[in-house]
Image (cartoon, rainbow, N blue to C red):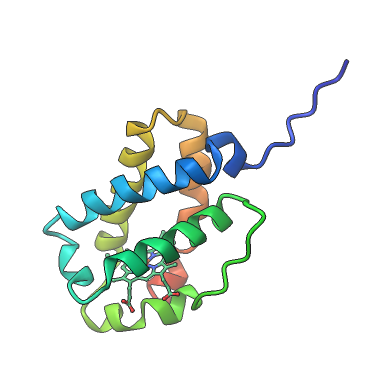
Length: 126
Ligand code: HEM
């Protein structure tokens, strides 16, 4: 019998339950980091976490539609506050360490990294 591995990244990571867990841990790390916490000073974290969950689930290949702002518009105000590559790298660092905390395998973390990396130019308005 030939077994096809057609699971999406989202399913492999553990579905919405894993995304929920990841976002909670991820935001705790982001808010505890002096390099980037100031960007979130005026953000309503409950709404933000909900949007981030939907976005991450979509980016992981979930059968949902992300209907929020595009990445460029969502971060336009932050660019005026000086958002740059170093902040983006700090966010990625927390995303990876969150997935490691959740025992996600290295190859899946690499896949998530590629998706996140593909948004860099939009987030940074390049
Ligand atoms: C992988 C890269 C990133 C992704 C996928 C991402 C995703 C998102 C999403 C989905 C939203 C909500 C958009 C909406 O209102 O519909 C958002 C907003 C926001 N993001 Fe990001 N983001 C990324 C990088 C960053 C970085 C590097 C920072 C700062 C260090 C940041 C800070 C924020 C803040 C403060 C908001 C809220 C803006 C507001 O309150 O209007 N994000 N992001």
